Image 1 (cartoon, rainbow, N blue to C red):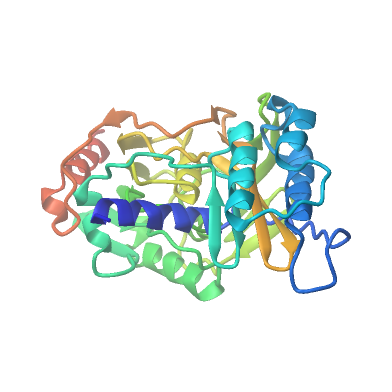
Image 2: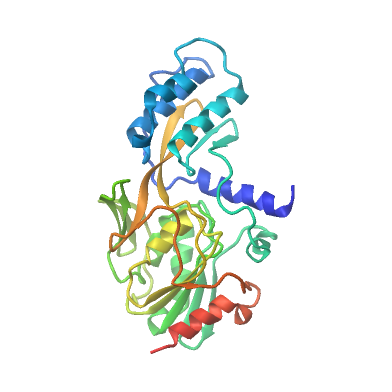
Length: 345
């Protein structure tokens, strides 16, 4: 397997195992008391959850699907056949962000997203995980790279907040927010960037018919899903809500990375540069089916603060495909284009 395919599988794993919205609907009534769940019962549970919570539930002929993948019989199902039936459910839904985890295995609909990710975007991962990076591009203009990751702990979030403040935020005229390597993970870091948004409401969950639902809000370092605070940081510098912002996105920007991008869509004095994102612009809900089986289903599309809905990916205002140089930002075409825009009156 070449490095491109290894990295492709890695990024799918990252954004598939880190759920966006936690909805702990525990379902133990159908479990055996032994160490294993009957595979028929797992299939029934997946169908039941999808009927109630899937974003795409109205697309499916549920009676036909039930007969196809979970008929009322007692025949044994091999693990291979079980995985194939789960894939059929996801395919019938058309849910490319859905997944089932069990026994260290992962079942998804099938290959998704671009298979040929440019080496310029995969090379930074060769030495391990990507961390937060900050830099002063020129006097009055800063740069921060937001890395992928699944940690929601207070220390990690605070580190991002402190990195932002280390740029002496109040004194900046403009800042580049680099999401090009954000291949998925947690959206809780939204709390750590609260000084930049210029608005309390950053976006919404959206139903398939375009109805705006749960708002995403950030206030005083706390990130809210609806009225529920789910993450917080200690804000350690004053806001600069009028600062000009250039957001960099790439074909690798996925899932939580796309949500972070949408949080800046519709903000005044903001521009997006790069290319279309990976294309997993849905909110996921998680379900613990018991005995080590975990299901995630797309439950909402993303909508920005102005109500614009993103059903596929996030697009840039200025398209620039090549020219990435993370080793030397002065030679990075997208960073230079962003800086040029930020400096315009």
